[in-house]
Image (cartoon, rainbow, N blue to C red; front, side, top):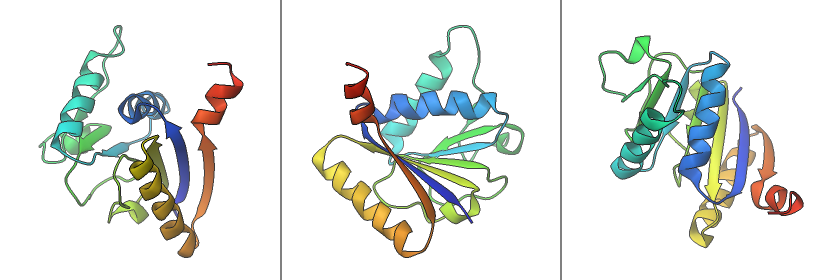
Length: 146
């Protein structure tokens, strides 16, 4: 069964997804990042091309002919076939294909409406019996002094 991690209080969800993508890639796991729309897909695509300065993070869109040979897929399209290790979701609703993945990471921003949709997703997964963990990054940042 998919394990689910929630990261809430995230000031910049795209940057958080980028940072997590680097960790997942370093662990040699296949990753899908489900973005909410084409704009977010383009922004995250750009982040992965530009950073880190000293490396390359191989990624493609879902419709790429290279997707099976590329460890990271970034897209807003619904659906997913192929390898399914880690899914990072930046969406306001649960991705329809999340249960195919071993691990789901839900990133929830600080905006009130986004936080509200995050609570609804938590309830959705909880009602279905998924094992979940929660990290409030706003509290972690406050404890760290900044």
